[in-house]
Amino acid sequence: MLQSDSASAAGPVASLGVIISDIDIRFDSGLSSDQPVGEQSLWAEAISLGDLLLRTTQRCPDHEALVFDDSRFSYAEVTERAIAAARSLAALGIERGDPVGLLLPNGIDFVSSFFGAQLLGAVVVPINTRFRARELRHVVASADLEVILTGASGPVDLIARLEEALPSLAGADDPTALRLAEAPRLRALVALDDERGCVLSRERFEELGAVVDRATVWRGRAAVRVGDVATLMFTSGTAAAPKGCLLSHEAMVRVWTAAARRLGWDSEERLFDPLPMFHMGCLVPLLASFEAGSTLISMRHFDTGPALDLIERERATWLYTVFPAITLGLIEHETFRDLDLAPVRGLNDVGSPPTLRRIQAAFAGAIEVGGSFGMTEACGHITCGDPAASLELRTETAGRPLPGYEVRAVDLLTGKPLGPGARGELQVRGFGTFEGYDKLPEAQAEAWTEDGWLRSGDLGTLDRAGNVIYLGRRKDMLKVGGENVAPAEIEAHLETHPAIKRAQVVAAPDQRLHEVPAAFVELEAGAEASPAELIEFCEGQIASFKVPRHIRFVSEWPTSATKIQKIVLRERMERELAAQLPR
Image 1: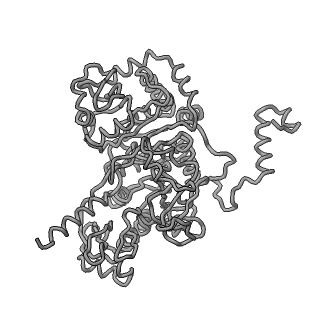
Image 2: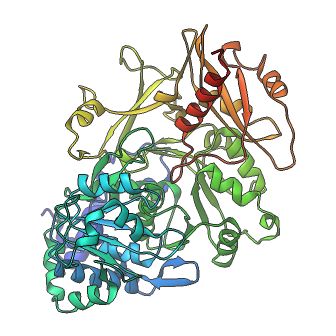
Image 3: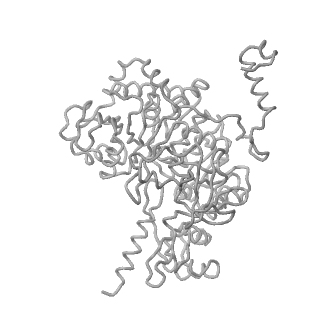
């Protein structure tokens, strides 16, 4: 190692400081002059997920790491629970690379099990708690799960759903050595809050772990490589069978370290995130929070009133609510204006520009509202709004790509890159993209271009500064008499109408034009509007072929875990129009 004479005399710590200082002075770090200070770092963060927890615990063991409803846990407590979970999983034979399923609601059990598996180098498979028998059977078999951790308490009996998905459980006699026809690799099903049938109880799970030496965990942790697969995240499966995305330790940590730096999160942050932990929208903000040594506040089951009480009581500083249905529910709740939410300084939401401006106004403009663009295949975040940017940039765009990511828009027909302002499919490349779809080589091949860009399946454009403007899913694109129409553009206009709370546009079949826009609309409480009024509101403001031909009012939306299922709306419209045809 090169050292100056003074560095040699000062010792190794001082030497490191001198060398880093020299690098800062001598070399161009590649940072542009307008890059936010919080993003300026001389190195990329590359660490395993287990080590991320251990490092933060060593730095601030007594700092509050988690708040779930009325329960709270320090980093030291989370770590001890994670080590205990690792010992119990090791007792069941789990080693590096083995897939472990988590079918659990938000809570300390999910977090400790997640990190416990990571300490062993296992691959964690978070499972959507809204999946039913067919989807569960697909995930269990596709992922070759060896152990599943689950429970029965709460609004959904998850054990009962697994029993329905895996009928052979009824005839099993050894909870530590399952041999099921539907899931040949599954060794054990652990119920952390119930005892029934052929499942392993929490008590027995912990007893097995108590005889495993802690050194076993340290040996497993030491063998983990940052390029190893850390999680197998399944897509929602709203249009096809869920696909498993293989994500590495490096990708997950680096993406969310970069996002946390962009947003300015530090150890004093108190991040409220009510999304399910099986979803990227909560799992990876958890990692960002743990990297920063801050506090994550969440709920076992989301409910608007208790959520607002929790935000106020815990003095949350940032709301990572992400989806308009959740955020609008909070600001429209009857108690919202009576609460002291002064500590809140920022909020993330992927709503349309009118929705983001509405959220900003609800907080009297005192917080930084911004959006983002991402996908499961890229660890959830590709771009992120800068809190220091103007209101226009924060509400009209999804922000710039995170350092290390590149985004381009390409022509839908030719695949050629487009210039600023031109609309096309968004494609991405960088360190945070996934390792591939598990056991789906054809889907894997289709996901990438020949020159190494990941196809997002999303429509959008970039401005001259590189900010991304999201325009919706490519598969949702309408073809109206030969004209391409992005539903997001129509939705954004409709949502400027004072009576409209939320709008979703889908294709409706049309004999002359092939398909035309149909809008499903949710009105504000107490508001009134007619279909004719809303159609007139669009005429003259957007191109005639974009004006909705059909308006339908809804009070509830069909959703997956977090997103409105447009396919259900489209099928509903198709059935209605088909029923009107002469027989």
